[in-house]
Length: 219
Image (cartoon, rainbow, N blue to C red; front, top):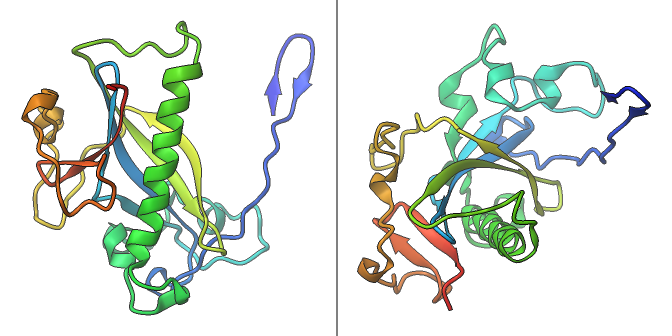
């Protein structure tokens, strides 16, 4: 609900029944991915996405209970029994053999959709957004936190892009992004990048094994 001098505007969106996994104790969750927009324009997504889990098991009721229906860490860390180790986990920890009938890696199933949606968003912004609203410049970068939700049908939905996201994330190789040097994982000189033969999409480039280049305006 937004108030203005002349009218009251209501913004509505459907409530998506969430995917419920045993590894999340059947609690609602969303996925946060760090995304770099570099120069004009190259876009990278971090492979080490995080899963942020609600504090109480999900049920289609008690709509005023934010510990059931809100997954943001800023809300859930106020819950008396909040457990960071269990409620802020790597997306790769969602991989379970045969879970949800996903066929193969659940991580790959989810992350592939995240890459695709981010790529489409970047392409649309670059080609259609008014210059006054979106103006990437050479020799600049910006880091965003992209949030996604996975619904009960295993479909990934883009929720929002957050500016200035937290970079205090540990990765599976015990490395951390240093907020004082946020570009440590990104080489913005494209001539030094090497194509990673392990990528399923030949246009994707693995940068220092942490970020994948998923969009480039270069022809």
